[in-house]
Amino acid sequence: MRLDPPDSYWKKDVTLFLGKRLSLTIKMLYPAAIILPVAASSIPPQYAAAVVGLVAIMAGTFGAGESLTNDINDGILVRLALTPLSPYRIVAEILLVNAVLDFVQLLPALAGVYLLHPAPPVWVLAATVAVFATLLTANAIGVLLANFTSSPADVLLYATIILFPLIYLSGFFRNQHPEGLLAAMRQLVPFAYMNDALKEVFGLATAASPLAVILLPTLISALAAAAVCLTAPRLLSPRP
Image 1: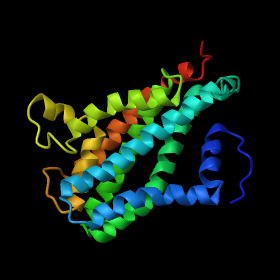
Image 2: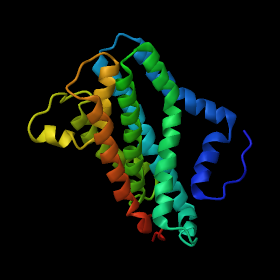
Image 3: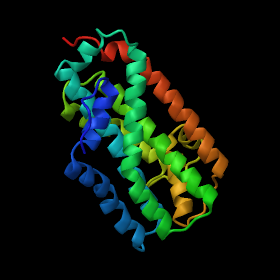
Image 4: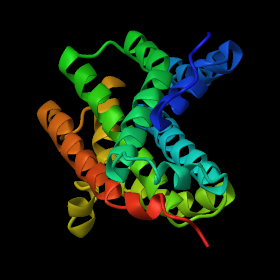
């Protein structure tokens, strides 16, 4: 696919995503290669939902953090600070565009899940919205880490430290019925709403409502993205 050279930072990510046909094919197929065999198997619904959730979380966090860290080391972000564009706008575009690209990458796998496990349309909508909110939050974590790391390896390390407690709180594999403080903390994690919606899609009833799964993670992920945008001056500043 032939694309014009990017004239803004966010277009660079789009160009890299769409520019090479083989690379694009691999990017679109690998989530489906992981998710669809699980969806077609007889694995318990809670674990099938967890697999989809983990693919979404890892793709969003690691992709954004590693890409930004490489560009920081190459001096690209420092040069962006010299342009008349607001640094907050630049980071907001990075977050939104990367979340959309990650979502496009997951769409074939999600479509396959919905075909293999027909669910009420309201739960399909709720799961789709919750997956996007998860991707936005995961990208926000990746951007946040890029403020404090100097190599992609550091991104992997620190992301793991942050993500594991959030995955535990969300009830992907353990702690699926938290009480007290853990239950209150779970309500603040967008991953948990995605997990509930995907469980419903895979046929396991939860206490969640479709409206809550749509509204709450959307609000939380938007607040997380807005907070990360406040780090824009540091992200675009020269590193020692």
